[in-house]
Amino acid sequence: MQTDVLNRFLFEDLHARGELVQLDQSFKQIVENHNYPDAVKQLLGELMAATCLLTATLKFEGEIAVQIQGDGPVQYMVINGDHQQRMRGTANINGQITGTSLNDLMGNANMVITVMPKNGERYQGIVRLEGDSLAECIEHYFATSEQLATRIWLYADSSEMLAAGALVQVLPDSEDKDQQMLDFEHICQLTATLKASEIFQLPAEEVLYRLYHEQTVRVFDPQSVTFVCGCSEDKCLTAIANIGQTAIEEHLAEHGEIKINCEFCLKQYHFDREKLKPLLKPN
Image (cartoon, rainbow, N blue to C red; front, side, top):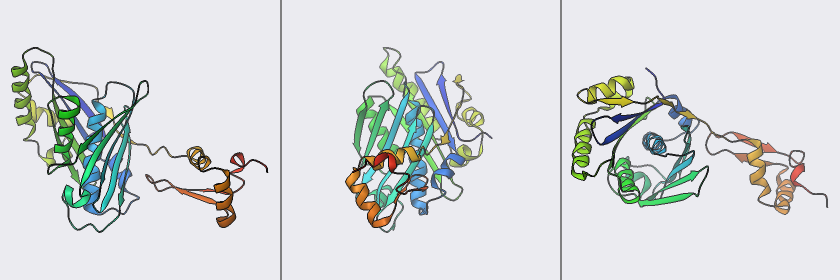
């Protein structure tokens, strides 16, 4: 079975479209170097699947960041992705994990969705993290920001390190709004029968057939999902340059080098005076 892949599909005779994402290695690579509790891995897997689905709804080249910020033991959690489904993510834990629900982990929280087109202006949507699940929160985002009826199902298995998700969205392609919603609700009822074991273990084609075998479904070419951290020495040097020469000199005098840890892959970069020469002007 092909994993780490996103499939888009369209119902030929109904006013609805959908997406299905199945994640294995890409999710494992996001969490493997971090000692996250199972509940955090679970939520991070759901957030990754959700970000893949959201990214696939973008009709331009660019990037997206989906971040949850709260006052719970998990201070924030973020997945960054782009139109090529290149993903990275991290979570910051600042307290003891005592529960597994969304509220237990994040407390009072907001979800911030930032879209950064390659050509065009960046824009941001902020929604209150309300409801019992992350899926409900993202559905609320679509209802308020995009005005599109959307349903999302998210799955994660912290022991097997698997994540997956499905999205169904109304297609506003006719004047008959009532029929659009009837079609949408019908597809949602079918999709709601999907079990975690099916989406984790079966190829996408078989999952789609089981759900929609009475419909005419057009499936587009699948898109691979990969983990790409993107950190580098050059990016670290740019970040160091922003603190100014005086601060750099003071830190070198005290510590002999500057260390930077990548929060996504945990790789550590070391910069001594020789490496920092391009940033240090002669007195």
